[in-house]
Image 1 (cartoon, protein in one colour):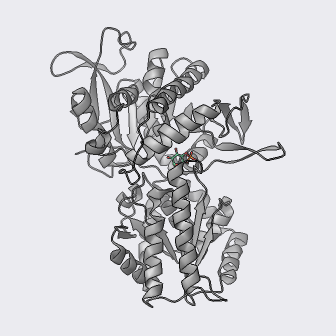
Image 2: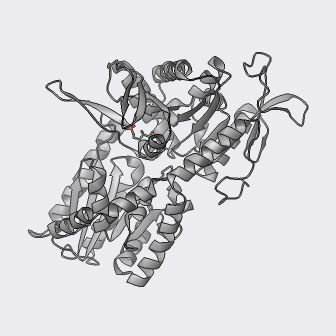
Image 3: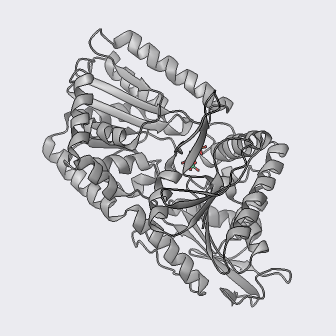
Length: 495
Ligand code: G6P
């Protein structure tokens, strides 16, 4: 069973009351959907609209159990605590997090509803996999209700350093909530390290590498079960929790297959032609989010036009910015800033025949995205902080022609693996400009050499491998056996 804030589909209700389903935004759904298509499981989540009480239903062979949220809960739990408190806090406080007690109360109440739903719908001894920052209290709530379950949790976004995390007024409750899981997965080694440090500082529990020892109280519902209960070095009874990195990925072969289709390759040629056949197409694809560094990328691009290093006759930037969290004030402000900047750059540098920035505030079907990836000579991923960034992996998987240059922020989790990208610090605008120029003029041989290495990595470490590694750790934990070695074997377990 998967439990996540969002279901893989969003309910859209038009002005005339017509309801339809569309794919949900974001990396979480993009990664989990292919996993669920191959597993016979159930997905518990919210359908994306307020005040809708929907019966369980099936879509593309996946059984979905919708959890309702009221309008007030959407405001306080989703837009408030999840996306105006936790999201900015966990992303290096790029935007200031707001701490509101009524938002926290809603977060607790909604987490309890998700836990109740999962407890009600799961079979004895089932494995339940809870996802992301919106539901960090669910593991503990679920364990209290159903000590028979095996509980996994995966955090799709960064886990911040203690100096930042400790600002959260409810920092202890969140740690306790997460420690209800048997296995806690993070994107990067650094995230798992930050979490272990928070556990030591706030709870005083011992950690040994990725193993956390949680003392068992007399009232602990798991004390009756012998699953992963051992004696600590001090002699007390402890449960062990495994907390380590499991870097997420994509269904790379699906992207490869799509990019090989003649009609998608034709569409890529069409896109190039429609843009006026520039020598270089640069591409950015992001949810319109302040963590993505879209402004930094536009600043660098604008300066290259201003100083004459590039010209609109030769280089075009396509920026797809899909709408996101539009009722949260920080996101509204960001949209205004980005659109002002795009307007200025276009006003200053576009000509009748060539537009500097083709700005698209839409989401697109996957086929169109793959065509865009194929058309793009340079892919810009300039996140200021990002759990993984699956767009970087999608671009690589789509480049069946072994061509294209990926510029990748070292603050995105993907940079741990994608070392042959041009790695940049997006705050360093000069460095970013240099990387753009280097990408534009990179010889074909070097492009192919880098892309081949990147592709090998992404095609091997795909999403099936990720979920198998996590579920293997979870199954082993059900038998009281925590693996100490990282299942993907590509990072040390030192912190
Ligand atoms: C990120 C988060 C997901 C979230 C997605 C889209 O990928 O990790 O949990 O679902 O963004 O954001 P939204 O607020 O629209 O669900």
